[in-house]
Length: 359
Image 1 (cartoon, helix red, strand yellow):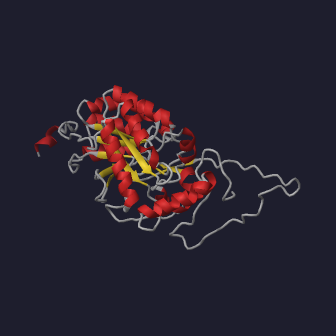
Image 2 (tube, rainbow, N blue to C red):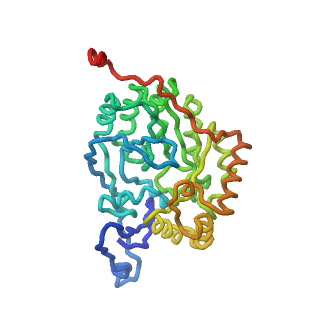
Image 3 (tube, helix red, strand yellow):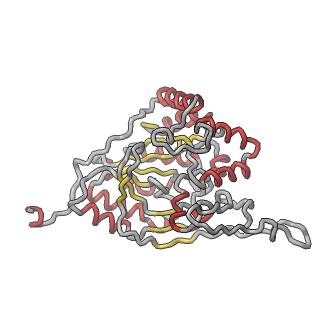
């Protein structure tokens, strides 16, 4: 597989070295690029997505990061075939011995036991009801969900327990589960956060190749809002020098679609994500590459990434301040609140435990 060969529907076709692996195998970039007789480029098959069973014994995870609002998370999948070159979750694949690059998009772990584990954990008296975030790492409505339906099964459990849940997604598939989301909304137990990175369908198709296009995300916002489900629009990530100028138009569009709140996150490039993203820039916007890199460094104190809590989500410096101000003014003009929906735990219920309830 040639490292600089574009593959339709995928992110950059590279596999950066795993930072935990001392052995690095690099392909010969000159081998097999062109037919030795005709000189024509050799067509290469797109790598197929493979699914693996994740044998995790627990499903609700504690989030210790102080700059994230929800303290509990649930992820039914590890890896994501959306192909977003900027995805901060890519480095998690390195703990599995794989790469943050094409491996992250083509080797997906599926937690088939997630609904069963969730039921067991919510049933336990050790669980003190608090809101849970779905998609704190990978999108719970990524393409695999159409087949495996892990997210829907988990929502069925949550609806039964009236367990508060917030969902983050960039896929129209979330509208499939409006019936369950409405059940949860009756008890103020759900909010859906739709990510809108750009309104430019052409750019979105390159930046997030297997995610829903912008018009479908706006349609999802409208359908969810019309169904009485609280929707927050996320401009995430804001990419300095590439998408930051779209903030006012995005907020106007999501407000017209029915979103009530909004939030934003600055582009984050931890570990090998920077290699994947820089490769994407070279493939798709080479003329803007230097400007974008310069702006990223401007908001990251001269670096490509700042991992410090508090500043990693917003950046620092004059350009970061400008982005924050533009977002604040645009949100106010569009009538969007910056407050997160406050979900209720008061209606949480467990199945009757018979005489065990007496102890």
